[in-house]
Amino acid sequence: MREYREDEGAKSTTGVNGGGLRSAWKKVRTHLLARTRLRRQQAMRSRSRRLKYATPEQLAYADLLDIGVTIGRYLLAGTFILYVFGFTPPKIPLSELPTYWSMAADQYAALVGVGTGWGWLALIGYGDYLNFLGIAFVSSLTIACYLGVLPFALQRKDFVLGTVMLLELLVLSFAASGLLDGGH
Amino acid sequence: MRLSVSLVVLALVAMVLTSGPAIAESAAPMASALPWWAWVLLLFVVSFVLGIVAVVAGVGGGVLFVPIVSSLFPFHLDFVRGAGLLIALAGALAAGPTLLRGGMANLQLAMPPALTASAAAMVGAMIGLTLPANIVQLALGTMILGVVGLMAIARKSDNPEVPKADALSAALRMHGIYHDPFSGRDIEWKVHRTPQGLALFVLIGFLGGMFGIGAGWANVPALNLVMGVPLKVSIGTSSVIMSIANSAAAWVYLNHGAMLAIIAVPSMLGMMLGSTIGVGLLSRTNVAVIRRVVIVLLLLAGVRALLKGLGV
Image (cartoon, rainbow over all chains, first blue to last red; front, side):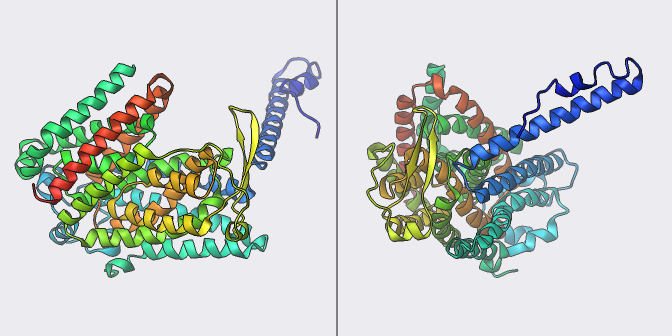
């Protein structure tokens, strides 16, 4: 594949229409298009280099994880700011927390009235439980990544790896289901 | 810089030695003596320092966080373990994309151990949350002392000799190639003793889920010394295994109500910030000295957990 140089687009249009807004726009547009092509070529080269050390499903897993981690980070930080700065009212006032945080989880849940399992979802309007959204999101990332790469194994008819992935999805979904806690 | 990191670690040792018993015996009065935000700020600072130390010493954040924070803070062990799991999970997830893209972690190698580890982590988390706190403290203390022993005696092998891949690893296509930037060579690797390795991951996952610690300290020797994976690939793949196994355990803690945002989020933020700074200090710090201090720190935290478990 022929490689584009960064200045190629600009050079090709130099002096076509002389001055003028239209000519300037053409130059910018051509320049931008050339840059985009160059970046795409660099990305393709880097991907083909990576494919020497990683399978396509590994790269797809990494891409999905990258997006998820970025969203998760903002979600965690955002919901925590809403909680600590009082934008969303907490179920347990912050000043009363020292009375609660030395209790066992069961005792705390009983006092607060949050059932086990997905019971926390009913309290999502409170600042402290709004934070659980970010935690649940981060904990779900692996499930999303496995779902994203399972088609690769199935397409390749790699049924051994496909079975390992399906079993992992079952384990993670079972853990996430809340059934272990009675599914309240 | 070397001196400052050493001083910070020594200060932590002093904190565990001096303030531990006072807090343990009178957690409630201490809790009421300080406002909530002071505890949260302290938690952030301690997590930040632990984040630096963990990176420099080459251990996971969770294994330092759980015994030390449960010794120094008035929080119940359930919430500390929940936060510890999230710390380990967040760190492993964040490192995953770079490691996987660069070939320093191998997804195909990670998936089978992660399956056994995550199933066991789920069971470990369930059992850990049903046992009385003093029993868990006792077991935690014993395990931390085991980690100390492992850290003190474990050997490492950069590129272990694997004469022949076993049938199971061949079926699971657990082999690969990685580029070593230091030698500039591509190194091919394969795996042996896969059944033994997978059995070890059941135990590792169980302990990780039960105590809310990332199990990097155990994953790396299992991959490197037992299964014959090169050290660098072992370290990278250990992170991916941790991210998968800890996801299963994190759900159990979350659905059991064993998470408090006010404890989990500042710990995660502190640890992430500390780790970032720790990476920068890595080349300027005497890693061997810090590692020895961390061993001492873990030894003290392990003994403290044992004593707490015994009600001493």
